[in-house]
Length: 130
Image 1 (cartoon, rainbow, N blue to C red):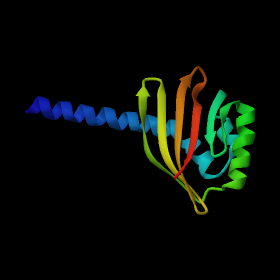
Image 2: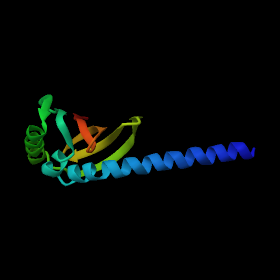
Image 3: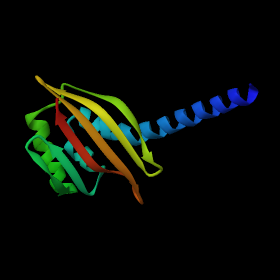
């Protein structure tokens, strides 16, 4: 019984530590989207980023991605943005599923970041209209 309790405590501590790491990685990205700050968001883009927005789906350079996100935020400013779930796909990647409200529109947002030499970088950002 002691072994089971110890094992459960270790699993909970490991899970909490992983979640805290994800929070540190995701916090600036979530803040940038919440405040419709395309420049700060683009600072977290990889050299190329896959953007899937209503009417716009392609792989872009970080600077092109910044302009596209600036235009998106102008047309659909955030009313609210909240994290629904985050996790790891493997040891070098983090994902987040979020809710983005703008006027009467609601989007489910998927963010995929991968660890690079300079830190975690956004490789994919998907805004799917609900």
